[in-house]
Length: 384
Image (cartoon, helix red, strand yellow):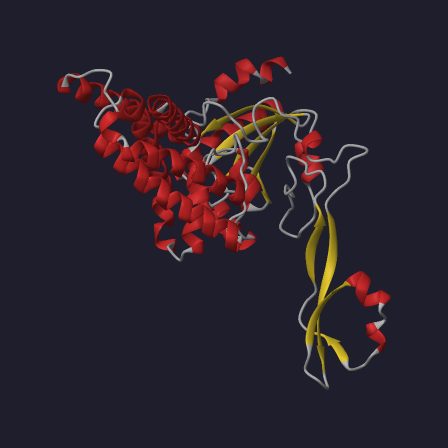
């Protein structure tokens, strides 16, 4: 029985750590964005520029520890490492859940979204299994007993794990779990299907009594039903807030709103263009790759002049910053504005490029492997 429990714990924990590490290493920039949320919560903002690098290292560590546990190499060191990691993650997910500081833990990236409480429950189970492994670490036997073989295999695992994270960071995720993946029809992902209900909210007022100084919160329905508004002693303090009453259907794309500098909505016009559109996504113009912008600018000019292709740059920067950027880089594309969150989801690059047609993501590229104008012409524009 003891041997069965130990074997189950060993392979379950090992496989889960490898799976978790690979899923996040598939999208290290996305994991980096999640780490930045934690950094801000714990006032570690100075780590934000290093978030992607830390993400790759953490993913590599998860994969390596998981594989070494499965192989049975260096069981004492590996179980110590697993115990330290799981204690840290368990405390982190508890804080996230109890104080509602982060809405999604990012444990399995965007492939399997977990709430903080779900993640905390998962970590408790892992903690129990890892404690079993730790207490019985001397019973874990390696598959290969020669130290030279163990070192060579470990080096290969580290190399592949770290290399995979670097590759996806510099190219794009191998498997895209985001709503803007190739083949996705963006407009249909933004609507609530017929028969489905959206989230239900209520407006909350904070009231204070001028005579007694008593304070209380009250919903808009209760505010009207009790007719407390007729009592001049009660006044609303501060701004009303929205509170979720009932969770409804949530479209996969719920936060995309594209506007011009004056705030005019161009979302429908841009994403539903029946012809090809080149969408350059540079959510942060201050840290975007200027060399890539120059190459994309040349592509945009040729695409517009030769095929009348509309080219658009989307950014989360202010109109003032964008205006300076346009002048400095002689930007040819039209400039529109959207929130940074959907822009980061569109393409894991700054800048990245999307090719849209009639609302469908035909293809997308990182600035490190973007096609030339001739390649775009031969594959797409010549055939339209």
